[in-house]
Length: 295
Image (cartoon, rainbow, N blue to C red; front, side):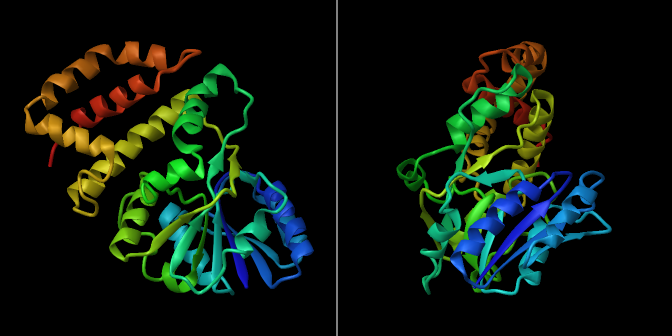
């Protein structure tokens, strides 16, 4: 009935699998949990414990294949038609997490996104930027997500049929630079597949430190630019690329790029402070976009 698919990389997923396994035992349904490790250097020994749980498996790839390819491979390995994708650094918020998803299983051509939350306790200063962004921009209510149902969809917690996944699987040809969920959601639009938003969240636990998150954010800007330049998504699908194209149209790209480089240290000082501004974070990413070589 249900295959739970968890791509892992340098993360201990035993607690997540154990929690899911305990919920599954109460449901008495046909279910499997597959964890596929993308050639990690850490936690592979600890995660072997997963193989001791009934109908659970932990496998390690010999070569790193990236976020898109590993999700496609997980779907291929799945036994059942209904696929529940979860990121390794998540944990269900509610005890009825699996049963809530089970109620959504029917013959409709749709995917179901349960949402994301962050723990209310503020983390240390060196992880604050990621937490502030997550709580303000990602941890949205169902009503807020439904205002933009596709762009608010994230791939860390969603239910999809294998037959639908075969139509809109993850594009393995794009660089491993993030925004694979952006392209995935746009493919859903093209295939006219509805995104159903429900309140069935997971906590996102894997907060990166400020420097790491900023580096990944810069990689994401490069990834977004690649999607737009390759005509895989329209420029106005994401606000950041839309604003960049307006700046480029009116000839301000080089001026903003110069300003970004001149004031980068000031940006970093504020973003790494106790009160990081998301407005300045948006300006930072837009400025960084302007420094990239135009197509």
